[in-house]
Image (cartoon, rainbow, N blue to C red; front, top):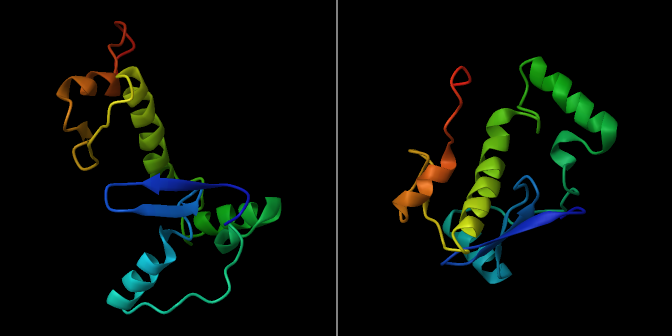
Length: 132
């Protein structure tokens, strides 16, 4: 993992990954090995530092951005890649407003399923003339 990353903690385990969810690994390592074995995935070789797939440093990011415009893979600036990060940050803020309560999120319907009244924090009332 590079200079920063994320640790996702769930009911069934933990996932350690880069900031943009790259190089995701189940923790402990034994769980990752058994997952690879169950899915018939090869053990990884040497790992590139975070961001290595799309280049590192200023010029690597710019090259990835240009390639995406020419029909290549999406760059890290793609809005579709930013949505899960934005969702996580917004849900954390809602959880804090509710005293740190645990939220269950349905990404398909974009709704909080276990605390229906929390859904009011997902949108706002706009002033007349400023509606979306």
